[in-house]
Structures are given as structure tokens and as C-alpha cells.
Length: 404
Image (cartoon, rainbow, N blue to C red):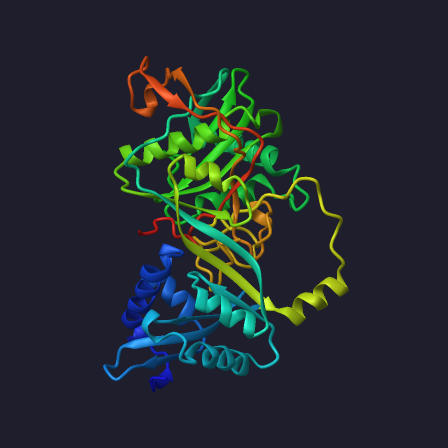
């Protein structure tokens, strides 16, 4: 085992911690915003931390404690070249010792096989996990807009339509928490990198809001479709249309997060997204047992609740313990965000419902929608959606604006 020199994390260590995060993301994938000054500052430099340096003085291992609301958090990284040498175990023990009696929520914005083994051996249980997915925008999917639907961008005139579509999309979920229009809209507007000009609400010919998509930086942050319009390709259309709009606006890649257990992840892959790692949250097994004993879970619903520890910074809106991925967590979930719930109820599960997508039925249609960048009469391949479900986690925890 290589001997490291350990010392408290200081402000001057910011660059070294970013480089460590870059090395871990390069090897294992994960949540891109992790390797930014802002995210490292929030995760590793908001409370107390420790860094291990090799004989070249480079930081090759680090851990830190933080807070997320009233929750005590912990996070850590070990350079790929320094794993399986006991450094991870030492960092876990350091975090527990420093936290004392506080119960810890462990934030992992990049995951490896070594980390999974370490957490399992340390008595930590995964309570949330989502796949980070990327679209390179080299080949764009085309999904025909459902008949009887038109779209409008986010503006003072349409913001209440977005809210209505949000409530209609998530209000039937068991975990839904009622939120006022003022609160929800304030949360949307305050999202780092929010792009109102690219966000859309879907309206019927009678101007009834039936779906929406929110875009932040290079992230598809949240998508929702009301029950009567699920299975009609509306969610798939909104995602595909957002990819086209983002490329036309100059984006080179687009990101989103989806719960690891969500079967609709396959549909995202058919739309051109590829998995680029995992982000997760862990708690002590004893803590989970106590929570179940004190507050027995409600009977399982036939339909999973929606999620978004879209993810955004991993956690960003409302009262998600983990706050979105685009909200700098201090500990996001993470997107992270693994229990599916509506965005505002995500707790430490950063997932937001991205779309209600399912089985696809390739076909050919004439798309008459010049906004999407092709001739109105051009024939394109199309996908239809069935009854699946996809959850997005935006980044601001953000990380919308995330890098690749």
C-alpha cells in the first residue's frame, strides 16, 4: 500500500480536487458537474475535509463532510491508480469519526466496482442510483408531433400552462406533494442555466396543457405528460424536439439522468442516449432499519412514483434532501434522485420524470413542423411511445451546464 501524506483540505486544494474528480470521471463516468470548481467547492470545501497526497504532492484521495438541510453528508474520491490499497476504508472511517453520532448520507457522483465493494463491506446500503446518459447529437431522432398538439415556449404568458402541465403530469403519483404555482415557478426560474426559449409546453387545440419539457444548459431537465396523453408519443416527441433545438443552439452533447431500475432507459438508448456512468446515495443499514420500524412503508402502488433528482447538481429543486444535481448539493442525491418520486418530493433521490415512454414502433411519417429544422414535407423515421416511464434528473445539482 502506498503511503500518503494526509492533511486538512484548504482553499488552495481546489485545483487538485478538480483534477482528482476528472480522473475518476474519466475512468468510471458519472455526473459531469462533479469536475467543476463550483461543485467541488460545495461538496468538499463547505465544512471539514481531508486530502491524501502521493510523493509528487498530487491529491490522490480525499473525503469531506457537509450538510444538506438538517442532514449530515459525506463524500469521497480515490484516484483509479490508488484503489484497493486501503485508502477508501480509511476515508470511510475518518468520515464516521468526524461525524460522531450524526447519521450520514453518502453522496457518490461517480461510481466504480471498488466503491460498490467498499460501501457494502462498510455497512452502507444504496438508497438511490441513477444512470447518467449522454447524447452526442450526431444523429438526431425524429418523433412526429401527435395530432391536435401545438407547443409554446416558457414565458410570462405561458408559465401557468407549464405549472398546470406539471401538476397534471405528477399529481397522480403517490409521492406527489402539492406545491403552489408561485413556489414551483420560482424554483424553475432559479435553476442554474435555465433556458426558457428552449423549454416547451404542449397544448391541445383547446389550449389545454398536456405535457411539458424544461431545458437547462445542455440538460433535458424535466419532462411530464398527463395520463390521458401517455402512450401517444408526446413525451418522446418533446425529448426528440429538445435534442434538435439544443443542437441548433450550438450544443455538442446533451445530458439527462434516469433511475437505474427504470425500464424506459432502453427507450432513451433507442433515441440515441448512451450511459456514461452512475451516481448514487448510501445510508447506514441500521438507519434504514430504524426508519422502516418507526414509519412502516405505505402499500406499494401499481405504478411507481415519478422522480428527478433530474437528475439535475445532483440535486436542485424544492425540498429534496439531496437537492438536485443542478443544485449543488452539498449533497445531492441524483439527479441523482433509488426511489421514483415527483421532482419536488425527491428527497435524496434526484430524479425527475423525463418522459412517459415505452415500446417503440418504427414507422415513417411526414413531419410538418418547420421548428424542428427540416423541410415541412420531409419524410423521417419516427418512434411511438407506449406505457413506460423515464425519470430525469437535471443537474444543478445542476449541472446543467454540465460538461462532458
